[in-house]
Each structure stands twice: as C-alpha cells, then as structure tokens.
Image (cartoon, rainbow, N blue to C red; front, side, top):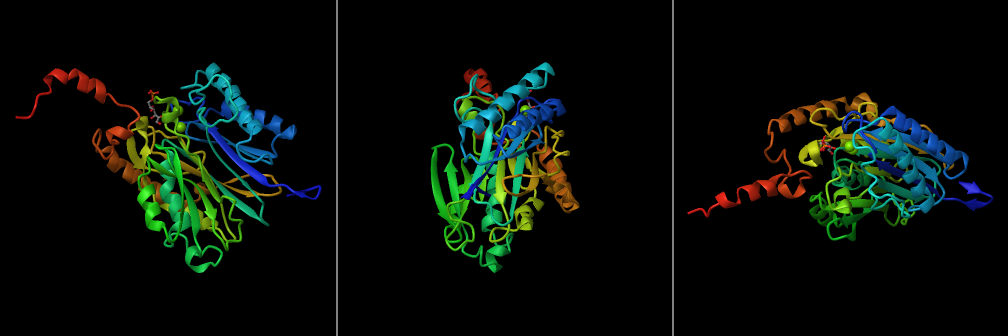
Length: 377
Ligand code: F6R
Ligand code: MG
Ligand code: MG
C-alpha cells in the first residue's frame, strides 16, 4: 500500500485465547464475539488497526487484525490483551466455563507471548493480489500443523507447483523450533527434506514456526509466507492450563502454493494429540466455523480455514473454506477414525504416552502402591 509516496508494509496478526467456554469447553458464547467486535471496532475507528475479523474455533476466541505496526508490536498486543480482559468480564458475568483461563498474568507486560494467548503474525509487502488463509485449531497443539505445512511447502505429491511451476521449483526454507531446548534451526527443502522430517515427525517437541521463500522466488526471501503459533501453555504456566490450540497464517498463489494446494493436505484427517483432557490422539476434522463445536469426547479436534483477499491493508470479509462440500469426505473419514480410536478407551495409542499427557494420576497411583511393588523374582 502506498501512502504519501511511502510503501507501507501490511501486518496480519492473529491473537487467540480461551477466555471462557460455552458449555464446558465446546464453543464461544455469542456475547464474547460481540464484545470483541465492539473493542476492535473502536480500535479501527481510532486508526490503531486497519481492519479486523473476530472468529472462533471451539472454545477459542480469535482476533484477526491487519495493521501497519509490524510483528510483536506492543500496542497491538495490548489491544488484544485488553480485549480478552473485557471479554473475560463478560464470561465471568455469564459464569462461562474457565472464564479468563488463558490470561495467566494480572497485568499486561508488553507482549502476549508467555502470558497465555497464542499468536501468529506476518509482515509483508502486499503483492498485486494477496490471498491469505488463516487456520484455527481447537483441542490440539502446534505440532498438529507440522504434517500439513510440510505437505503444502515441500511435498510434490501434494503441491504440483513444486514440480511444474518455476516460481516454486527451488523449494522453501523452514524455521523449526525445539520447544523443549528453546533452540531454532533453518532447513532448506528439497535438499534437506529428510533432516527436516527427522525433526518434525517428533511433533510434540519440534514444530515448524515459519516458512520462507528461497532465492529466485517472486516473493522476497526475508518475508515469511507461513507462520504458526508455538506458545506452549503448559510450559509457560508450569502446570496444566489447557492445550495450546494453535493458529497459522499461510500466504498463497503466484509463486506460492495455490489456494487448492494450501487446502489439499486437510483432505486427510491426520492424527493429532489433544482431544479429551489434552491427553488423547485423534483425527483432526476440517469444518466450518459454525461446525467447530467439539462435542464427542470433547472433540474430535477441529480445524477451520478462513480465506482472505488482503487489499490495501484491509482484510475484508473472509470465506469459510472448509464449509465446501469437497471436505465432506474428510469429515466422514475423521468420524470413522474417531470411532475406531475411541474403542481403545484408556489404552495407548488412543491415550497419549505418559510424558505427553496433560492430565495424569500416575504419580499418585504409584505412590499408593509403593509398598506393594515388589521385585519380580
Ligand atoms: C481439552 C479440553 C477439555 C478438558 C476437559 C476436562 O483441551 O479443554 O477436554 O480438558 O473437558 O476439563 P475440566 O478439567 O476443566 O473439567
Ligand atoms: Mg477451554
Ligand atoms: Mg480450546
């Protein structure tokens, strides 16, 4: 966007939090959406943000904002924080479940990172046309994005453009976080594909944070083309406070994966960790925002995709992409897998391995049985 001869970059930020579920952990009360819209409308009028859309996925309230302040901007993060605080007051009045659960601090300290909410942000020079998808998940964790993001940007069986479009043929660069050791590494595909997979196959520890274009791409190399929220709530709080329920932004078309290539991986409802009590494996089911209301066994986990055409800093009205009948088959498949997984009850691999569970009674059970545990022969 050109303003007074200066080329202003556009930033898209999605900042989300669970500030109260309705009923239980299933969805967001309409009054919370209304309150968030009111707050962001004021910010838009005051010129703090260019545009906004308030979304929801399961019990998570999603603030999608466009502005010119860059990523990690204190004002934008404070706006999101204050909006969540205002919504928490509504949630408390309505006695919604877990009101304010993701606001881990009493006062805002400059950036929502480490304070409970999750965020994904990208600053970029708007292209001639800028299609962007905002993915929102509930009842799972950031590693749930590893498989689909890999497929979008590095799997030629998913993305035909990697093979037949010269804008994509040289591949992409992946920024991977080790969330346990707090380290990061850049890996280039296609030549480091196997190293990348060796890490991101371990999705509870290694998560894709960003994807960048490579030399020769029509998009500048320094501009991310995908960004995933990686906030680890359980590690932030040092105790269980709910799964991370991640979000992601993905830019598309004209030298990037086409819209249909960005959506293609979701036709396969892959297994993710989360679901009931953040302690079970289950299929991720693509669905519309209206249908993102986890019910059966608090699930199965959901993913919603909102498609925007960003124009001159404005988000404009999104299209609810998974509403399309083309995803009916994936939904049916997800329900079949959910049924199959549920039949395992408390057994792995439905139940997560002990180290990945968010709820456990194992230490207490072992303590109780301490005296009765005898050496085997
Ligand atoms: C999973 C989730 C829910 C809750 C479950 C128990 O991410 O949010 O499955 O873990 O409903 O909730 P509490 O312990 O609050 O009764
Ligand atoms: Mg909740
Ligand atoms: Mg949630």
